[in-house]
Amino acid sequence: MLSQLKRLSLEVDGRYASDAELQFMTDYVKSFNLRLQTYQKLQEIESSLLQQAYAKMRSLDPMLFVHGKEEYSHKWKADTSRTLRYVAVAVLINDPDTLRERLLLWFQTILHAFGMEQTANVTYQVLQEVIKQDLTPPQASLVCPILELVRRSLGPTSP
Amino acid sequence: MVTLINTPNPVKLKHPKKHDHYGFRDFFTFDPDKGTIVDWNEGQNLLTTEDFIIGLVEGLQEEVGDAAAATMYVIGCEWGQKDAFFFEKWFEKEFDRNMRQANLLFLLETWWWPFTSQGWGRWEVDMGDRKQGFMFINIFDSAVARTLGDVGKPVCFLYAGLFAGFFTELVRKQLSCIEIQCYSMGETYCKFLVGGQDRIDAAAFWMNEGANARDIEKRLRTGELLR
Image 1 (tube, helix red, strand yellow):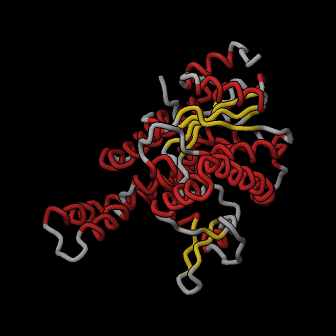
Image 2 (image 1 turned 30 degrees about the horizontal axis):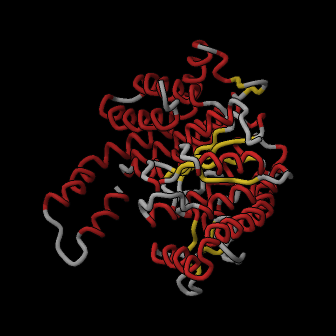
């Protein structure tokens, strides 16, 4: 939304915007209540989401939290919680571009430095699965595409 | 980035330990009253146009002729050496640890992020050959090459100098750098080789003989050097 507003203000410099150019604002207003509910729900269930995802990932492969001699469970929780909060804001203001610019481009280089891309890949895959149990289908349809963007950005670049 | 200045960054004031601060609005603080653009690490920034880069490159060419490339390289070296000290300070302040205790790849990514935010391009470090004493760096969207366009030869001497200067200070051993592939040669990205002078001389010789980056990588990996 913020990125779209910024683009709009540049594009309509010196003229009036067309109805088509303003459509995204109408769409946003229509979706706002759902976005706000989803944002509040994410805030409410964050810690349980993290716990469910952690348990599921540990059962899949406990080595996902180990790299070299280091154990990363604690770091994983802090990183995933921070990312979920960015995801929640991206849902609220409908702005995946800002999420990408402020967090994902930087975070993918840091995860790469620590060789944690596969863990990130599984994390945001599992989160999409567990989140569907706690959110309504319309809420999940707002959150899951953003989680998928996170998974594709932070996961391994080649299969 | 030339001088340090004391303009508080509002995001930094509120979240001093925030590491994910490289977005445009987080990293830079614009002060219209003072006319300053200060970054997260309190370095003062200047905005320049592509005309500035053209003026710098062509002006030097006119002043010193063929020595322009070497001059740009030396400017880069001094910048890299100074930046290594600057980086050491802000890294320690931000992460509460000496940079020599950090994971090397994490350290390098952290060093380059301010450059990415400032528009010098994204990078990729290939340290697979580090034990053999050399490494490769890819730069995507070099500010110099993007400005000059396809001129049929490498142009990013400033970057080569920057890497030589920084890595020399980092490993405390004299290192050099050469650009072995450049966007200005019609390639999709720039590639730099960092290593001891003997390897850089060998790469320069092979390039003059018409070798491309892949040939040079192969020859270095087989341990070939100039006799």
